[in-house]
Structure formats: C-alpha cells, structure tokens
Length: 136
Image (cartoon, rainbow, N blue to C red; front, side):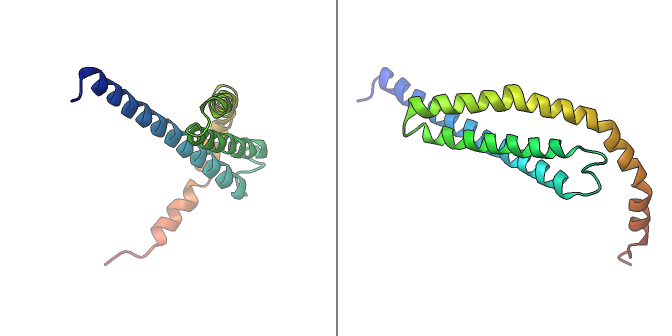
C-alpha cells in the first residue's frame, strides 16, 4: 500500500519533470525567436545598414545559438546532472543577464528609426492595398 510519503515523493518527482521540460521548452522557443529576428533583419536589405545596424542581427543570432545550446544542456542534464547543470547555468547567465539586455537596449535605440522607416513606406502599402481586386 502507498503511504503519504510515497505519494508526496511521486508528486515531487512529477513536478520536477514538468519544471525541466517547461524550462527547456522556453529556451527552445526563445532560441527560435532570436534566430528568426536575426535572419529576418539580416535578409531585409531595406533595414540593414540604414535603420538597424548589422551587429544587432548578428547579436540576435548569437543569442539564439546560446539559448539553443542551453536547451540541449537542459535536456542532457538527465544524463550527467552536475556537468550539464553547470553548463546550462553558465549559458543562461550569459544569455539572460548579459546578451539579452544589450539586445533590448540596442532595439530601444533603433525603434525611433524603425517608426520613421515604417511611416515613410506607409503610403506605398496603402496604394498596394487599394489596387488589389475585391471579391465582387
């Protein structure tokens, strides 16, 4: 028969597993986000060099790579907890405490220029929308 302590222990183990998968999935989604932002801004020739500095795109992809490595370190903690826990902690600290704040400050400095760029192209987008055929 199961006692109260066994039930608590099983519950604790289940919650630890959920916490592991939620945290590593969060890191995976952040890495995908930063890769998409980096690739999108680097491939958009209208933005790179004029509105957004190329280093911001490269920084986005570096953050994505560090977060992706942190995702794998989190998964590999199941194999060797001490070693991969240290690697995950270091990569999380570098990404979240150093690189992401630098990225956010740089994005804040670029936002006024992005707004001006969007307003400059606003008329072009409105003309394109008016010229589309309607469903009549």
